[in-house]
Length: 288
Image (cartoon, rainbow, N blue to C red; front, side, top):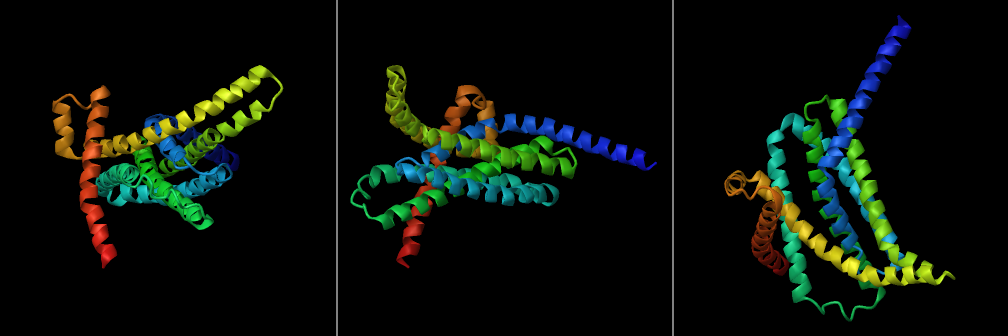
């Protein structure tokens, strides 16, 4: 009888693990687009940072991302159990925040282009590094929230244990994937330098090509990262704001390329409106 009970327990555990594996795979596919945006945004965070500080910054943001998941996974489970109506408004607030960050980034780039040209002392560099990490962790929180909510939607019909295990697997797995890839991307120029020191002329040529390519690649990531803010943020607003979602559906702008264009336009508009409200208010509070 004891052995029969043990075998039944093992069979139940195996069945749960099978469900977790299958649902984790499905959830990973569903969240792949957001993970791509997350990768572009976080790789962009180390643009302009000295080479020796790139990996420490990435590690700091990765730890912040794990803390975000530690907060978000239990919160998502609690919300789904007790107040599921709050999930949609929170996603929309996150979308508006992403759009606000995108517009603020563009405004800072064009209106304060030469602001930090003379700051060569160590203290401003440390402050800037801390600012980068905090900004990256804030952005990661919103993207992580979307990833967790999407994963929750995939497993909402399963029991609590399966839901919890899938979301933990997605949270840890996506964090390792994103920040591992970011670490590889930002060190590719070091790889190029290493290849240039080899004896083979062909290998040296690959190294030179890699070093020449990386500045263009990082600029491209910067552009993609900003676009990702608008696309993800605009998509969160468009998909969760009822009348806007219905309008896009009627116009057949809710799929394909038109969906991306609509999300971009909505994201820029929402970000501009948020900046028009928030930035003057921030200045008033700073004066007070």
